[in-house]
Image (cartoon, rainbow, N blue to C red):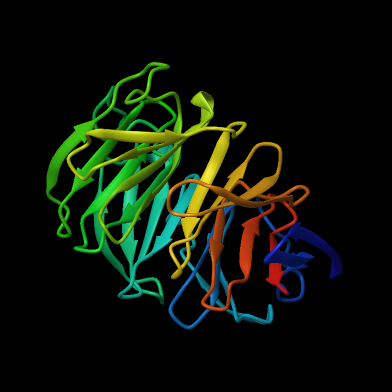
Length: 275
């Protein structure tokens, strides 16, 4: 894999294209998103079988699962208890699995869309510290849905629009340790921040179609947008660094060492190795 250096200040990276050694005879599908588990294993979520492909931190293939279970891979989140949450966009479902692919929960009516109700081509999912589930229902709808840890519906917030508190393609979502909800509102060029009840607090701008958001254990945020930029921000939204990751960034996730992984469509995964 090739290597190039990107970033500024304390956030400088070697970028490797492409991360992950597939088994002989395999090719990548469109890798929509990526996540890391508690052992820094890397999970690629792709739009072909097998939808989940797992590597160690050096890119060695470990295993895969999910054949025949996904229509349209989109969002992925791995919770602190190492359960895997997947968004099947065109099946209108959220699915929860163990790390080895055992299905634990299914939310949504497969192949049935609902206007401004769960779900209509949902985009992303994030888990709060108490286990509550927040889903960005962002392609057919413009709303965030809130569920209990056992999958019971609590409430929804947001309507289509261009004002803060409204959404136009909520594409990525994150929940921090204080249960604040961060929404990458793609077409409104902002990260909007809400309390757990859905009350708007503030927004960060200076993005072009933000795609995804991830937060590390130092509370630093990383945001990708459609210019293939990675923006690094403090918890109050101050820009700390910005760089490009060419041809990558529909999804972003990081490991415990500060390395970043970005989905890179048919090229698989790009790894931004922290220097």
